[in-house]
Image (cartoon, rainbow, N blue to C red; front, side, top):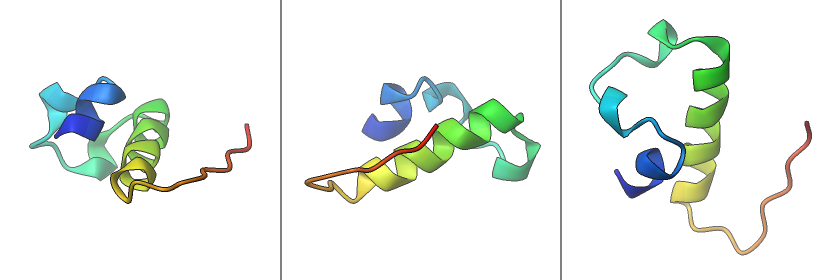
Length: 45
């Protein structure tokens, strides 16, 4: 839940991911990546 708060999606934790807008899906992907507590996270934009 902490990672969802970080990307401002904590209020939608019970939603189905496919119902998210494209930008929200990108934020969810970021939260999933951060949940693994990586030492390094490479992003492209």
